[in-house]
Amino acid sequence: MPNQAPTRRQRTTVRNKNLSSLCTELTQLFDQPLPATIYGVRIRKLLGAVRTFGCANLRCEDKVRIDGSHVVLDLEYVSRTYDPSDERRRADAILFVLHELVHLIAQGIGAKQTVRKLRRAGGETSLLHADLCADHIATALLHRLAPQWSLAFLRDVQSMSLTSFPSTDRHTAAARRRKRMRMLALRADFWARRLGLISDRAADGYIYLEHGQGSRRFGDLSVLLQGPPVAVLGTARLGTKEAAALERVTAPSKPLPLSGLDDLLVHALRRLSTPDQHLRPADPPRAALR
Ligand SMILES: [Zn+2]
Image 1 (cartoon, rainbow, N blue to C red):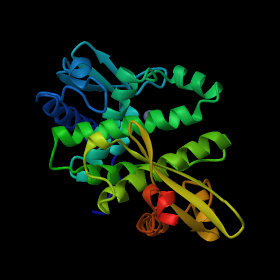
Image 2: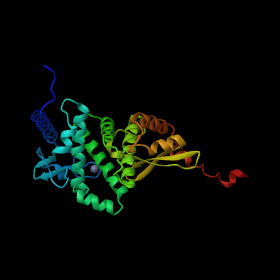
Image 3: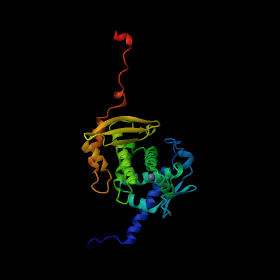
Image 4: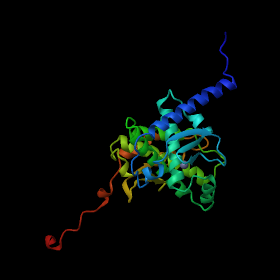
């Protein structure tokens, strides 16, 4: 008999089975003592009462809801992401849930309405850092609850997941830039950990980048650590082609492939000059000049 496409009922059955597996996985993770704080967020106080997870179609574009000790996840996203037989897709779906929980419990942007208002107030940069902070806490928390997954592995999963959501022409220029800068930050954070530029510890905060076209001959790149305090880890000059390539990350058409971004970031991170190298040696004492 020829292979037949699964019927709608079969697809629904597989989806529901997968989602109950995701909820079981989350329930088991939360069955252990939670860390008291992660990156300044009082995780145990805010999420310590959570015991079980379930799925439903949430309204108003909500992604998660907390009902006492029960957390409800919105069906749509998690059903597209989670696959119990694929380790990266398991981690990806769990990271998404934790990211949304951080938005809800600690950042005041659990409701889509608040996000819209922040955008209307011109808060794209604040939103970028709210996302990066939630990404950072989600990876750190999951690493604590499931230590077999290193922070670098979780960063890798998180950044690759963003490639499934490229910008479209319907996004505003500011929203497109935010998506691009988030991808750059997550990918640079992953490589900074892999290359040993920062230790694989949550306490150090997350990495983000600033870059520009500079002159016609070169651009400039700064690699920063969002401490606190915010600190420059190093700077590098970019060739004009490199500076232009960074502008194409997550672009609606002809986006820079991930392999191209990885090559560029690894080369740039390897040739960073640190702030110490920029400090000129102190002027010699006058007596020594005589
Ligand atoms: Zn978010």
